[in-house]
Amino acid sequence: MTRTSKVLLVVFGAPFVFSISVGGQLIGEARWWHATAAYAVAGLCLIGLLREMSRATLLGDYTDDIDEASAIPEPGLRIRARAARQARQVTRNMPCGCHRYWSSAGTEHDIWCPHYERSSA
Image (cartoon, rainbow, N blue to C red; front, side, top):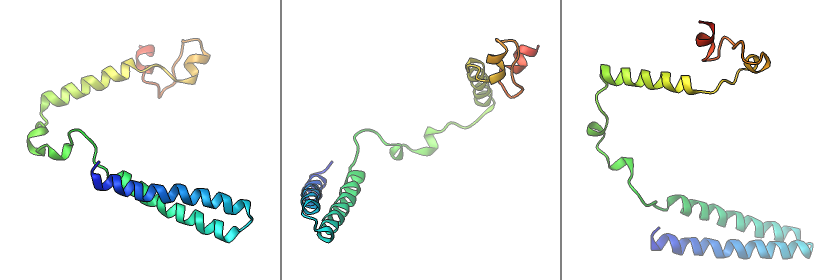
């Protein structure tokens, strides 16, 4: 976060808190239009705060700095086979969530369940 961002956060933050406080006091005095204006100012300050907070730079490495051509390997037969093997492992390790399996005490899976093929064989 740069020094300018911190200053802008204070510039938007102080009027936000002040406007909320004044709006509450004006509601207590039954001055509804003035309270509405105070809360409108607080809303504008909140928009400014959120904008500045979203623009703040984060620490760490970014993927924009990486050369895309050298970072992504060329998809080959071994990479596809490895991806398929990992997908099968993930599917096998998934816990069963089908309703029929739990209501039949583990004897029968639904057709859409990933464990259906293994239990029917």
